[in-house]
Image 1 (cartoon, helix red, strand yellow):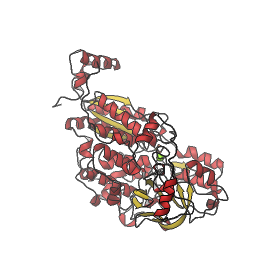
Image 2 (cartoon, rainbow, N blue to C red):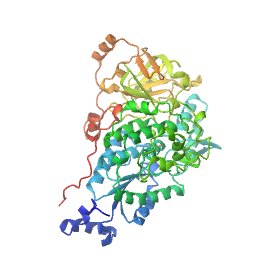
Image 3 (cartoon, rainbow, N blue to C red):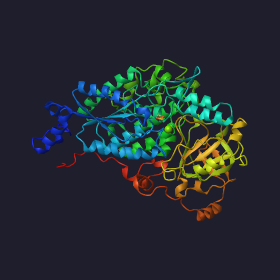
Length: 571
Ligand code: FES
Ligand code: MG
């Protein structure tokens, strides 16, 4: 190594401090030469049995360590807060920012020269990248990979997407509770994360599209030996990245985010990528706005035929050539010069990519939709913006005017939705309040509200829904999300009443509440903020300092890169 590495400020001294830092590490079995100035690679592991999507990481990490050792580095694994989607309440999103603080401080406070970020389940990828971006030491993402395709009674079923479908079928009376139970074991057949193009697969794809992961990272199934090989090669590569001093701030340029937004449109990626990319850009100090999602993503054809927008699953995506093949199909729309963790450009990384299955990765002429990406809506109901994913919506509902049926909270929705006397039909617009960052708290994935049972039984399967919530990346429907400002801070959403007329015009990017200003002002006078569910503690801090969805729902004091200067000695 041509320069003195950061870790040598711990391990290189001959005084009592050097003694302390080395001596205790030697109880790991490390010999003297472990401290000779070789790069120290932190491996940030989100293993947890409570995050089942990442529960195979104890095995995967060994491949990363082998790669680091082969390249002459010293691998040191450390655990961080693991944000598991399926168990954490009130929502894993509440803890994304907490986990990112853990990552940032653990990297900066320790003798680390570069870091491997082991992510899988939805929030683990953004939390790790946000923390690493705020530190800006060389970093590479290794995703845990998706589960094998779900299989039920001879047919393919997808994580999340089919849960929403099956549960509507049970409510509509066309699936029995016993069949519903049987689907549980059929859906999750192997280690790995959701194998639809949900948020986990989307964020693994975003890491790859941004240039933060090796090509192929997104799609190899968790149990595929290619995944282990990619982990090993990533271990080798991070050692070289330390030598090159190739850091997130070099890779995460505005062009990288533009590429990622375009790729998100091409893969029919999760709406959750919107808040995560905005938050990551905020950490690294790259300018990115909600409007950029519309600007860069508009008219990107959705060519990846995966659930929830299409039919196939991640295993099929892998066999079709993975993300490099998708990026090659839209190469003329991408910035090919941006640097990546390989040390090569985006264009060089995808030069040899091939599409092996045009039913999975479609030719552009027969894309699922020519209007992929994310539509950013504005209007008096969402002055700071709201979003909708056209590829998951019903074309006939994307221009719609209907009367509001209002649910003040998620509990109010649950009490009211199956009331046979509820005045609602398929032209109504369902409005849900107080599910945003401060309101839920944590901006839960409840925006894709299930439809009323009485309408399901009539065969209705989609209606316009509007809220300040998020929805699962595996979900679908004509669902307007992330309304900002949220109801809990007194946004116009808080003022909507039953029977108000609302206009949704996706082509015109408009979301309008047809109530005059004087009446809205009168209602605003009567509005009182909801009570904070849990004052104090992390949740209290979160509600006090979280920014709105159009700023990525990060905590305001976490925005920015605080660097990796060596802190003062501990003794
Ligand atoms: Fe972990 Fe879907 S629950 S990825
Ligand atoms: Mg989710």
